[in-house]
Length: 275
Image (tube, rainbow, N blue to C red; front, side, top):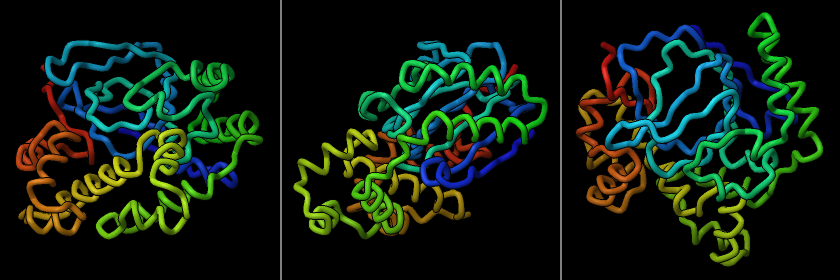
């Protein structure tokens, strides 16, 4: 697989973590379960073939999408193609920073994949056409950065509260509490939840749970012999029972099932072998 990453310049880099281009993927399976990772993406498909979302249980096709789409914050796994014969350019937003690019609250898009022109500017389809005309990966990156900056420069404003709260949660998810954040900023719990739903897509409590889940996923990847009790404690779960319960909700697997089935790439669990 060919993969290239580009980090945009200021001010886009305050909202976008990176662009990633990939093609020529040759997986041995056809479908992935993609786990909630706290990320939000804008995906440019550089092929003409539609892609699909599958039911997590039956694996039947339940939605198709094509050209450019926006994937909102997820609190549950999503089952998608493995990437075979794909060519994509993905905009990976900073956690909690996609809101300035949208025409509606983030909570409307939680657990949804939608046509990008419905939630961003319609110009997004024209950007895709220009990407198709660009001959090299670097030219695609440069064109995408220039066009996004031109379209959204006036909307690129950071919400200081959300920036503080997400940074606090990301830096120490095993220690921070929502009450502590509320006390530090002087907002009521109700007001904090309202702002977070609008700008991040979920409540602070749910965001914290996803970050703790992801910390567990990363620790599992680093350990040859997994100490479940230690992971539950290190990642800030109340106890091992709560850890297992949240893990099953967010992944569809128990922790031990996940270890047996996880694939090469973090957060992508292969489900079906190629024939």
